[in-house]
Length: 425
Ligand SMILES: Cc1ncc(COP(=O)(O)O)c(C=O)c1O
Image 1 (cartoon, rainbow, N blue to C red):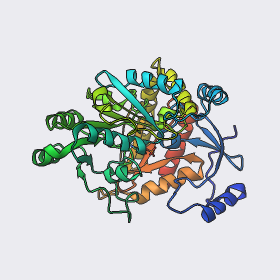
Image 2: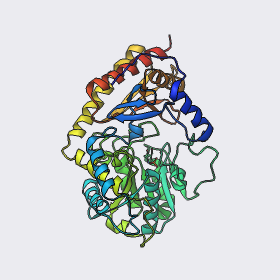
Image 3: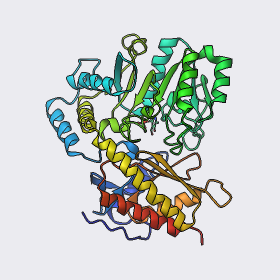
Image 4: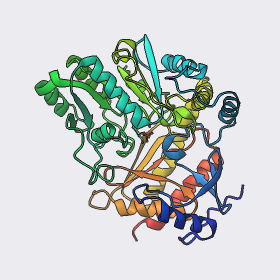
């Protein structure tokens, strides 16, 4: 490993430059990239680009690599499974990894038993299926979601997504049967359900906003949402695609609140780097759709299931969760010190290893340019980061939960330098 965190001038050359030119010619601009580089290989939290430069990764592929890139146990499980059986399609014939994973996830989710699990390929697809299940179970048309929520890029998932820019910009009209209410507030939801509750089939909520900026709602928010949803006879869907699998220091963020959802949507880190997602839920709801309504050609592919079973094993002894909490405490303390020393107005927040810095200008307005400048400073020092929030003024960290302490500190040094560089005066 040849990590070099000195700042370099922007503008990639070499193979990276050639491949980014190719990208501009053959890939539409709609598929955008936070960090314009081209990665060739990755281990843990070190990603190496096609010119041989090492980068520290604080993105985890947007939270899909909580166990780190290329974890040896995951790669071994994938290799073994790939040699045995690549694919059947569960609509043709079952395979054991699907069934074992469904059994395993059913015991892990905080949902009242008996629980059933269906597998699919992406988080958005899982959201679509959760809504189908809720509709089949209730026969009611409306689905309620929250402002600033992100649920994916497919049609229903996009309709539920509250973050207009960039996701829904110029794309409408979307699904009409969606109603959105402010995240973190109870009164608007309560009024909506009082007026239209009989038509509401489901309420879908992220326990903590992911793309919306790592926003933690008041402690009573999720319990009150659950209470109101149940009172209206609707289904509570918790979208834990981003918060799940250890990110918040518990296996699922709902566990911090005591809320037991009816359905849960899982994705990202569940697959350890392979495309896999799931809907888990109370059996009576999960069995509402008839045979053939749920599934998909690659849904629950054997290799992805084998990877996921290895991920479940890695979480079994609780040490990764302990690590997530320690990582978060350390990172937040260092980031708080960094913004204070630089005299920058910012909110450092998070839960477990879900860590963010939201930048404001001196008037207290979202400071998008500051967040962009910090991210660019990180990029010049070869640290991969992401932004989030309605105004893209939030720098968020998705470090691998077991990132080595030295790497974590080097990455935090880089952010500190980038904040100092971007700080006014
Ligand atoms: C909370 C949440 N739900 C759903 C999705 C969609 O997942 P995917 O991109 O795998 O379709 C995401 C992706 O970021 C997400 O954060």
